[in-house]
Image (tube, rainbow, N blue to C red; front, side, top):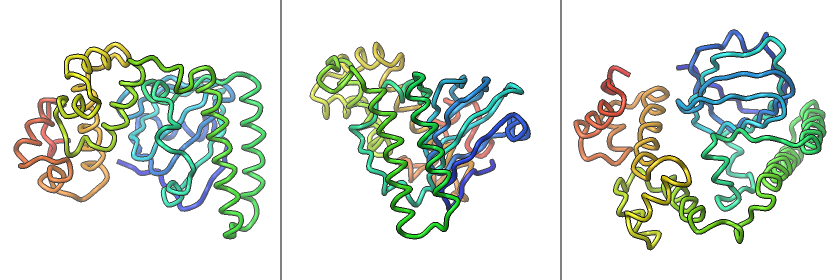
Length: 269
């Protein structure tokens, strides 16, 4: 599997001619990609889930995502901002700033015309800054501009749906998913997450299924499977080492889980 990664910030425009050569090839994304659709449509998968991306939308590709482009229209045009992995810890976003409903939709967000115009303007400013030498000062400026870009998006997505307006079911689902992101390697029981959230396992399963269309166990399995595929595709770790990283006591237990989920063994992947 090919990897997309760079050590420097990038602000570029992509089109059909650039993308068509990458069609049907899996790529491992390292770093953060913010992609604003300007024209046309493309389709593909992000972490093995189907997505459709078109004009007037913003696609956020998170680090360690596996992306496959399947179709791109000849008139497709988009602007891309890229943040290298080494600068991600310096971004000001916290877990509480993330709108979980957008995560459930794999981060394809619809933009209104004014927001699209604002993001295009900010993209142009970032592009002009990148044309100059990347000094320590300019790196700090870049991070500030990208933080502004992200908070503009979040402010729009969260408009009218702030914390106090979340229903109890939405809040439980959000808290479950946030905890899952941190704990899925060590804790693979739904009972654990229910206890941490002070609800019954039955109630947690019902609520998460209703809000996200997936049960807690399905989310747990998906998280483990995605990380397993990423490690198999992008590292030199053997099956035993990957099993240990994912919290399995033996490689046979991990192999059984992987084969039940995919139909093939980790070695065959």
